[in-house]
Structures are given as structure tokens and as C-alpha cells.
Image (cartoon, rainbow, N blue to C red; front, top):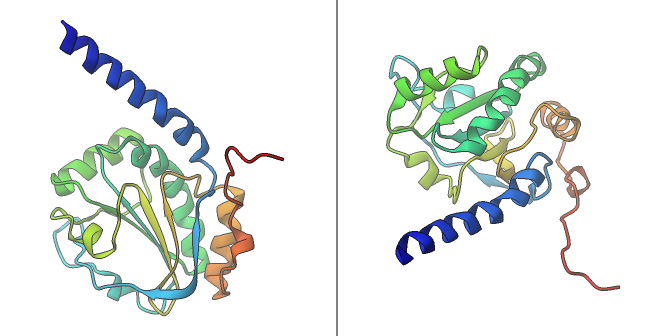
Length: 195
């Protein structure tokens, strides 16, 4: 009985700790814009037919690369925004790649897309999760902004409203080939600062 109470208490505390983070995660607060663009390692991506569909096939295009999984609730929560964003980005010459790290591959992605009514995102998978390792993704979701030269210029860990006004400014700069600057990211939240 004591063990069960302990487990329930721990679960409740863990859930309470994640609530503020989820509420704040809609903004791009915490976006890291690199001073110098970072190289992006080659990663193996598969399409719906299990054919290679790596980032190298998008050379010369800026890319929004989102790593997600169907078991990750914040990931699933941001998929509809990415789905709405994809046609607008395509019109600007920016590729959007939503890369699933589900071990269930195409089946898991297809089921998630059907449940959410996703129409614009292509099925892209990395069942072995090698991309997450190579891209040094400590958590999901993680989104990388990659310039037309194939370099990471910014990174965001967590769910965001990618079709919102904060992201629109970043996407316009990425599409134009402009350098992303720190003023494009919301300022960090400072907790516990005294006057």
C-alpha cells in the first residue's frame, strides 16, 4: 500500500512539474540561434516506401527539420501546426521534413497522421533513431532550422506553434537566406530575479 501511494505521489508531482513547461512551450522562448552555423551530419531517412530520402536530396533549399514520435504527446500536439505550415513554406522554397523516430515506422506514422487528419506532411522515418543521436537531440520534439547550404542555424527543443507569428518571422528570414539574429527569438524567461 505504501509503495502504491509513493508511486501515485511521484506520478502526480511529475505531472505537475510538466504543466508550466507545456503551457509555455507554444512560444519559441528558448530558441537557440547559433552565432555560427553548425554542420549537419548525414542522416538516413526513409520515405513511405522505405526508400532513402535524406536531407542531401534537398540540397540548396532551407529546411525545417522536426524530429518527433507518436508516443511523445508534445510532438503530436505540434503536428497539426506543422501540417498547416508546410504548403506556405513550400511556396517560399523552404522544405519541411517531419521525421518520425517511431520504431513502428510507416505504420505508426500513418496511424498518427490519420487520427490527426494530417494531409500535407510526408511520411519520413528513422526507426533506428540514428538521426536523434547524430543530431544530438536530447529530447523530443526537437526542430532544426537548416540554411540552404545545409548548416544548422537554429534549434528549438519542445513543442511550438510553428504556424504562429513568432515562427513566421524566422521562416521568412530562412527563406530569404538572411542571417537569423538573436532578436528574432523571444527573450528567455528569468525566474526568481530580485529588483
